[in-house]
Image (cartoon, rainbow, N blue to C red; front, side):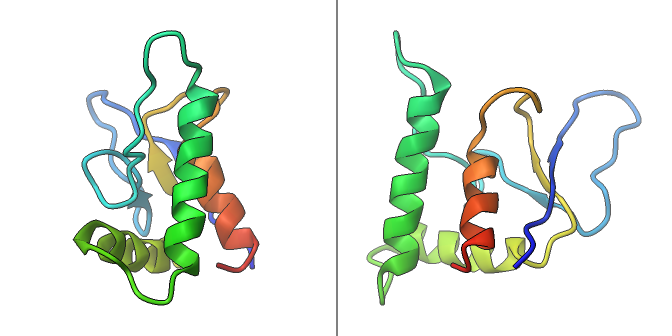
Length: 106
């Protein structure tokens, strides 16, 4: 399956979310709940997110409301035209993990 491309959400006058795109930021269901701590690199938070997302998507039944909302939003993300986040496009981002999971057929 082809994953929608990643795009950068902008906070500038006149910027509009493209039609059909989906926001993947906190505090939404697709936002990365893992934060970068002192001395950690963003890659570690992205790796934690990917491990968590795989566990949630492999489980037969979601354990809590957060997991249920994530699964529902993930299904919607498969149909989106773009996945938006505030991270710079040249940096590692959890949206790359979402795209990888979609391409793997989760």
